[in-house]
Length: 198
Image (cartoon, rainbow, N blue to C red):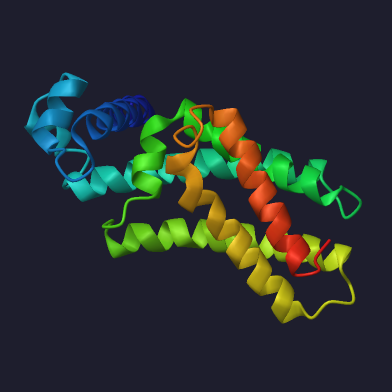
């Protein structure tokens, strides 16, 4: 019976998170309220507070869900590239899944690039970015064994920072998201080439 209650509770929490995504997209991250989220979920505010303490707690659950799913995407991507992958193909292979994830999860971009997130959430997002950069450094080091590690770390941080920072712009520059993504690949490729990094 306790297991059934737990399953029901998890299902209710998931429904609240899904409702929050809708409300964040509609009202904006800053203007969304717990009352609006509860209404979207079809429950009373009191029922919502059985599962989440406040709006930030809900936002944290949404962020965690997005980051978990994005990490799963990249767990599938990293094994497809190696030190022998051409640099342009490497960048494209890493960037396109992020663009596709953004397209399928519009609210993700609003939250990921939001300048005023609570510090704890920003740290969680930054942690994912840092883990991505660290993985990229390892790959670049395999490709460029003669280059100083510090140079590779700086390049990886710069390149990976360009990914989330450019997310909101994809599709707004040329009107074609795929073309914008290709252009961003060109920018990052040219940056790495300018640093002598293969």
